[in-house]
Length: 204
Ligand SMILES: C[S@@+](CC[C@H](N)C(=O)[O-])C[C@H]1O[C@@H](n2cnc3c(N)ncnc32)[C@H](O)[C@@H]1O
Image (cartoon, rainbow, N blue to C red):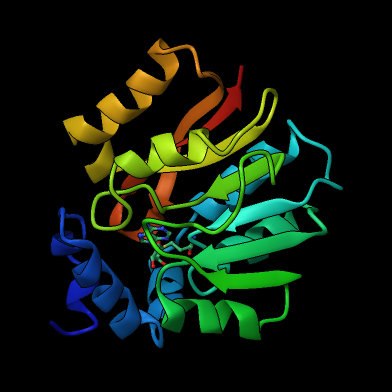
């Protein structure tokens, strides 16, 4: 697979975890340039929406922080203290190197290595997504929240068409674990005309 290929539709397909990590490890070097060239807008949209619902002094966990583009957007929205984690060490190394995060660590899909209630706000920007973290990750993240805590997440267009991701979100709402306090469709990769929903959940 060439690095250009991974931004083609085959990026947005289900795959085993080891393969997901391999895709992102291979992409780490050119990820920023490639997604920025295509007008990656979800981080900015979701960070601004998050800034409207929680205090900017809140420490935000940037879950699946990748190379740190989501952290840059969170900082630009005004958040001062960020922690970042990702399953792909090559992506995380880039995020660590930009020096925005107070703390970063490599997590595993089985063990994200933080406790319930450790964060009042978790951002998962482009993470619980077809081709990245599986739908079950959503319930895992919700399970890490205490009452009133926030999960800010996004579903891109291919993910919005996947019943397993829709069901994962519907289940969390229907079970009464969370309420949707913000949801808005808008540009994801502007240059290729792809949209995403940015979604903010509050734990009940
Ligand atoms: C599309 S990138 C988004 C990165 C960053 N949040 C951004 O907005 O640029 C998806 C990221 O999710 C990470 N990822 C995939 N599965 C994961 C999991 N189970 N837990 C945490 N991160 C995961 C990948 O390694 C990759 O860095």
